[in-house]
Image (cartoon, rainbow, N blue to C red):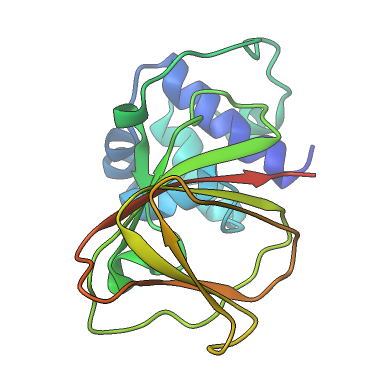
Length: 188
């Protein structure tokens, strides 16, 4: 079994036990951000870390490696029910991520609500090995692609579809104090 399935198992088992990310973090001795990154396959945990997580879930380490059999065909949710997690030190840059499909453990899309607020530090350009769909829900931003010269002002309702591995970053447009977007990453 690969690490992606292990991370999905951790989330599915935690949810089947009606545990929150905070509760699992507290029981395992890890931060909420670390547990969220493990569940969203953003970090590769050591065997020692996996053992602590398994113990906190009331399992033996080997049980995390077993295939889960009950992946739901669908899950309902609400835009305000997103599970917050820290991604690439996002809070340091005034950015908050809320995972919308965290209850669907075997997904190929990862939708998020992302909130932007002013920050002293600006995030560097980043890129992902996944395709991305971006929908600005409120506010005004500058979406910069490749470098600082290639900037596009986006307003409420504007969208962007971007292929994998394109350097990009988001900056609040002048005088804008808050922006909110929905982003969907593919796992293709």
